[in-house]
Structures are given as structure tokens and as C-alpha cells.
Length: 224
Image (tube, rainbow, N blue to C red; front, top):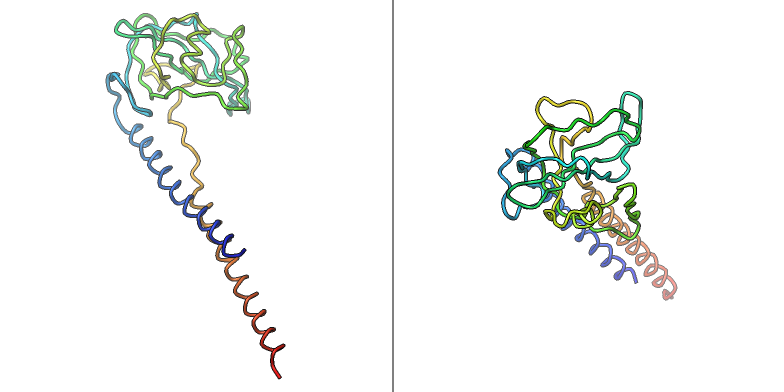
């Protein structure tokens, strides 16, 4: 029984080591994307790639993504991400996450006039999970970045299969507040691996002590 448990604990430890290598590759891709200059949008952009896209915003088709709390001068404030179609002359519209706005923001949002170029990170389509809240079409509220679902909500026949996470635009202040960095997934796999290996080692020590005491007791009981 101890041998089976030790094998399971070791397997979990090595699995976390493999997960650590996988997560470090993702973090390296994110770091490389942030350091690279934006490039013209390729035909098939990869996730996290930094690109520049030119078009016209459609503020009338904006939707609100998720509930996000940010620390502001007034303290923690509830807000949402503003996602807006960017209409292009050379391809389908691209949904752009322009950034965070507070729910109670009374002033109108500043929109670039005419054609504008937006730089940002490519974020591939997400899929709702088991506990993802349902979208609210009447309020244009979404809880997962799925371009196809968003397009149906605002009445667009077709959009690009990704979302552009916009970077700050030169000379523009106020709301929305764009992302300055890509979100980084947590990386605790090394800690988890150490825990599993430590448990396996502790169980091996406990089994060794128990075996020694058992054999010693058996030898004493068989002594003349």
C-alpha cells in the first residue's frame, strides 16, 4: 500500500515538473510578445502576438466584458472592459478590448476620430466554462471573449476569430484605461512539485521506520 501511494505521489511530482516547463514556455512567449514591436496583422496571427490594425471604431456596437475591480483614487472600484468593433477596409472587423471603465463613469468615452491605428496583443477566442455567467444581450454584457458570440449579439455577420487587447494610444488619457501588459498565468508548479516529492519522501521514511520497528518486534518475539 505504501509503495502504491509513493508511486502516485512521485507521478504527481513529475507531472508538476512537466507543467512547470510548459508554463515557463508560455511566460517566455508573453515576455517576447511584449518586448517586440507591433507588426502589420498577418493572415493567421498567433496568440500573444503584438500587431497594429487600422480601421474605424463603431462605438454604437460596443459591449461590456466581465466585472473587473481596479484600485483607483477612490479606492477599489467596480468596472468592466469595453470591447468595440474596429471596421477595416481590407478584412472583417476586429473586436478591440479598449480597456477598463468604471460602471459609474458619467462622461462620454473618448473615441478616435476617423481612421485610426490600434496596436495591441492578439487574444484567441475563449470558450465558456461550466460556471461562466450567461451573456446579457439586452445590456450588451458578456463574460467570455468569444468573437462569434459577440458578433451575433451586435448584429455583425462576420468578425476576425480573435480579440485585440489594445495598448495605450499616444497622447490619449482618461477612460478607458488600456492594458499595459498581457495577463500572466500563475506559476506555482515548482511549489506543487516540491510538496508532492516531500510527501513521497515522508511516506518512505515513515514506512522505513515502521518496517524497522516491525522487524525488530518480530525478531524479539522469535528469540528463545
